[in-house]
Length: 356
Image (cartoon, rainbow, N blue to C red; front, side, top):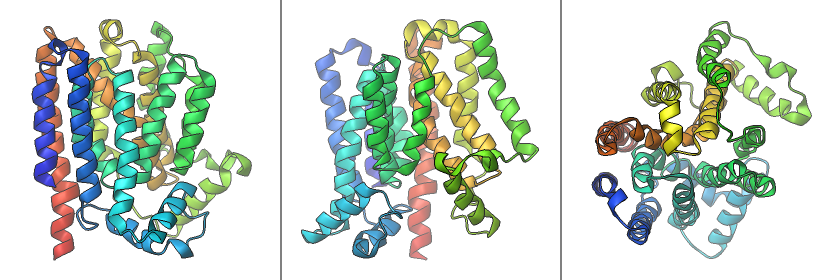
């Protein structure tokens, strides 16, 4: 699996350098072939190849005893019917991959001016994080990208539809409703200043330990926030090792965010969705910096859900270079290193530890 991931990344990198010289049909063919390969990798993996996959195996075979409130309706029903038909857990992996990968590629083609480069960026991190581990979030975040596209084009009902549809796959997807308040209008100087202040103010929020979850009414999610608070108070969080200022991908995203703000006037001419993507990225930082005191698990999940837009900001950053090919080479170098790190952390590291 590791060799397969690195192979498709290298192939995508090679094509990304020449995609502007390719016709659209050839781009779609390459994206389709890469998508099929990604589905096969995700669907044929062993439950012990990546974190969380073994947990999915346990849930899959115990689906008949699951409380519907524990897991999203989609997971319960998909698992139930695949079980009833006598399929093993890999059928579940394939089912989610068949949904998430085509949706993701479709969204990338709609939102990216350089779809092959964007796919490279996606493979380097989010493919491993979502499609190979957090399968439910993989589908939900793919649907969220479509919601962003329709919101940017002011098609409100389709935006709401894709957010609510994503909610059936992962409850955190409902937080995506926030994009109804984000427009794609050109950012004024004062708006860029406000966006630039998000991280410093969030750090103050974090280090002073503010917890505003007590102010949220139960009917607006306050009861679920209380459940996360209780887990943390009892020391039962399942991912206490996630610390945002020690997470290299988070720190890279902060750097990327400020580069995009600094070069906004240049980048927005080449990437029309820059305003809404920056706003969503800013909100991902808000989630991380203001919710970590309540629950590191909740903060990390929401950050990763919204930070999916970073794949488009990285793509847009290529236009800060002249010629753009230099930008592609620079970004490919960064994501290549990132992919290798993720492979060793998520895949080889997990497999080695499991075999001990």
